[in-house]
Amino acid sequence: MITERRIHIAWLVAIVTFLVLLASAAFRSSVGVMFVPFEEEFGWSRSAISLAVSVNLVLYGVTAPFAAAFMERFGIRQVAAGALLLIGLGTGLTLVMTESWQLVIFWGLFVGLGTGATALVFGSLVANRWFVKRRGLVMGIFGAAWATGQLLFLPIISQTIEVFGWRYASVTVAALAVLLIPFVWLVLADRPSDVGLRPYGAESDPDPQETTDRNSTHSGWAAARTAIDGLAAGMRTRAFWLLAGTFFICGWTTNGIVSTHFIPSAHDHGMGATMAAGLLAIVGIFDLIGTIGSGWLTDRFDPRVLLGIYYGLRAVALMGLPVLLGPGIDPPIVVIMILFGLDWVATVPPTAILCSRIYGPERGPIVFGWVFASHMIGAAVAAALSGAIRDAAGDYASAWYLAGALAVLAAVAAFLIPKAPAPSVPERSAT
Image: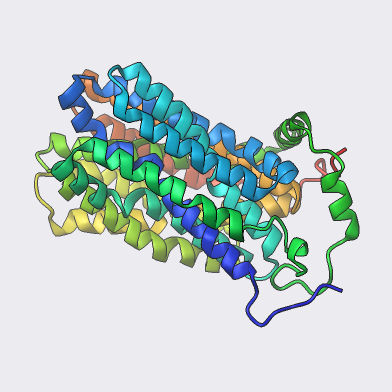
């Protein structure tokens, strides 16, 4: 018989997962404040630096579903610890780079793979395994960690760069990634049953067949096949294309243009990097409210309606940004940044829960991994295209308006996502 404790260990697992998501997102996005230092020291163009960011974002997204499958086969702690080590290696090697292609390898490839394995799909897997009750709230907390990590620490990183230089910031990121590994190894048990517990809120013991199924095959090929099978099953349904399409636009309108190009765009308007990073920190602070609140709302209301509202509000913020951005911080731009924050990653809990409801608790995280991959592919396209628009036009105005128009399209598409489970994707044990 599996026992219960007064304070469930699931909450400790959630805290460590929160910290990994927070740090991993901060590590990935810190290159945004390095655009201008790289330009000044190496003479690289916005397009050249954007290429490294685009590779990072693509791998960040595409790694996610395979990471979820490998976590199913080899364990959460092993994959997460290896990913943090890869992040430390990639950021540390930037200290010796001299060419832009090296930035593509170190930041694009290594950091992209490492952060992709410790992204929201990792959080979704933890939430689905460890929580029955409060799952939407926990996903909201994880989403807030992921989004806030990208933004909240940017002023600190920017100030570090201004005072000590970008190399000192890279060393700090590398060291912090390595320091998180012991916490992951000591706390992150793969499943509640591994430590003699039920998931939080579960009223019965897990099916004994679960352990048999997940231990039946432990090869890398089986893990990859699980991810590919999840994609194939999803692609046969309309729900997948709507979820992936709206999340493609979500990535475009957050990581792709705002995280990557807001600080360079503000610099074009005469605003200092630290001041611009401070505005992004406002987004990060209010994202904590918006995303956790979204998780609470997702447990109570139709996730599709929530998505429609979130994308609509984001469109308003994107359309207003190029008009209001200037050399100083005025109240209207603060309002825009607060609006960004409230719905920055508020889309994550309803999207993740829809994947779980439509495709089931086991396949749902894998499908969400591919939906998340589309998010990061959208971000990569936006990062590259926005940099090219700026190089061609001399400013980012057209890029901001394009992102706003896409957000309107996502708001409409959200209401077309089916609510019922997809009949063509029954749960199937891995063999």
